[in-house]
Length: 136
Image (cartoon, rainbow, N blue to C red):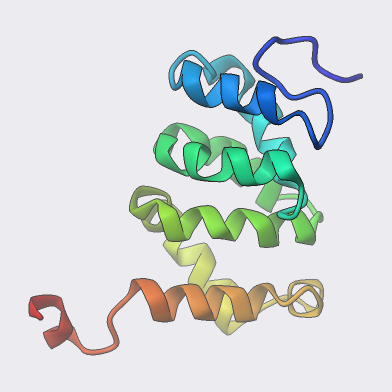
């Protein structure tokens, strides 16, 4: 059953409600974080583009909800959520071991959905390969 909460989009094109959620900010959206995260099940949905940076900015409070998705088998949703880690150093840090595991030892399903490649690209962008780069 779709949410009736006024800060949760009603469909993938409900940009006005997504903007209301962003404007309300955190912690106002805390009770509906998972429902907002559900709109990132497809990175191409208009509401996903409205919500992704905002959700990434929430950081650690979003982690249990992301963990719930990563404990399931919706690999396309997981693929989309990996994008949040690029925008949130806090989330990247929390999920760093998961990111490295997927990049180096993906399951067959993770490999099929190219999560390993996405994680490898994320690591390359977020972690300097040379420790001296930290001072550059």
